Length: 150
Image 1 (spheres, one colour):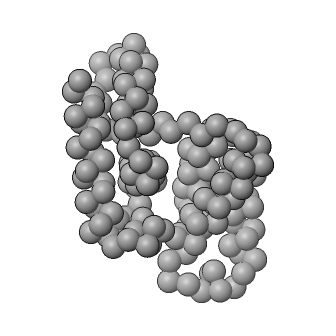
Image 2 (tube, one colour; image 1 turned 60 degrees about the vertical axis):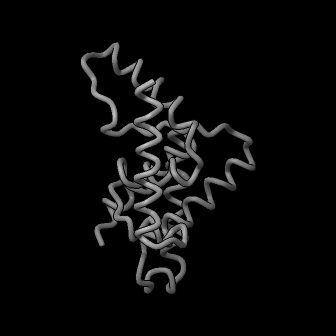
Image 3 (cartoon, rainbow, N blue to C red; image 1 turned 60 degrees about the horizontal axis):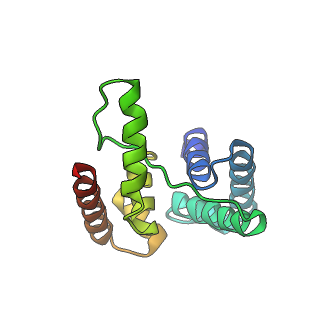
């Protein structure tokens, strides 16, 4: 496993959840410390599932401690940009459309578009089959398309 690449993925996930650079860096470091601190984590079949679970729990703990606000802003290939002004409009439209989705659907989109995780890895994190994750992914995209067409 390429730990530098995995570090970047965990960092992006933490930043997505917390929207604070320093806090995301700290949580990412703590995730890897905990992962390497337990031999059973490293010997498991799905190390990324374990790392994402650790990171998610640490982000949740940080949220509870600091009472900070999560900003759900996933950018994918859903919108076409024609210029810098469109970037601003599209980001706002996407944020509003994302609010129509439940948390799991937003995270599935994040993992697919931003971290490019497989449906199997995502399913392992949520205890769902890869087919169930794929269906949720397709449903979320359909909702986003419908909202963005408005």
